Length: 116
Image 1: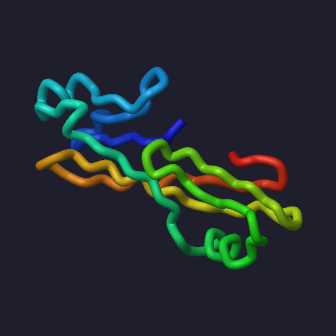
Image 2 (image 1 turned 180 degrees about the vertical axis):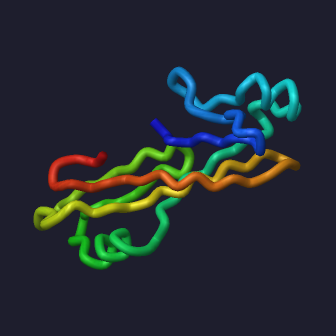
Image 3 (image 1 turned 60 degrees about the vertical axis):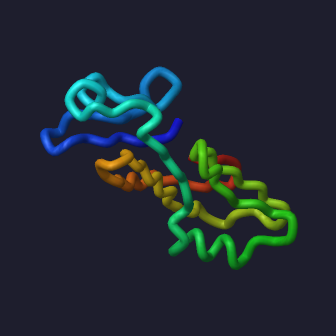
């Protein structure tokens, strides 16, 4: 699940993962007058550190990507095995139309057999 949690200045959650989907809280709807059509989220890797090492050393037909709409990370290693864990960051950019833009850093670890 996408690890997105946006709080207002008072610490109240206004946008977070609830029962299988990202959703606005009642405070976001009632106080800030937001609706689902006013919120968009885009996911992308932070292209530094371990991400750079992996991208520069991937063999042909290997794949490392994050779905911009869902945040789902795909790692297909068609070459040698990983010799250590690689720590990556996916940045979720949450845009509240005519209000603000919030960035949420989501840690991702690639291990030899899985994504955590």
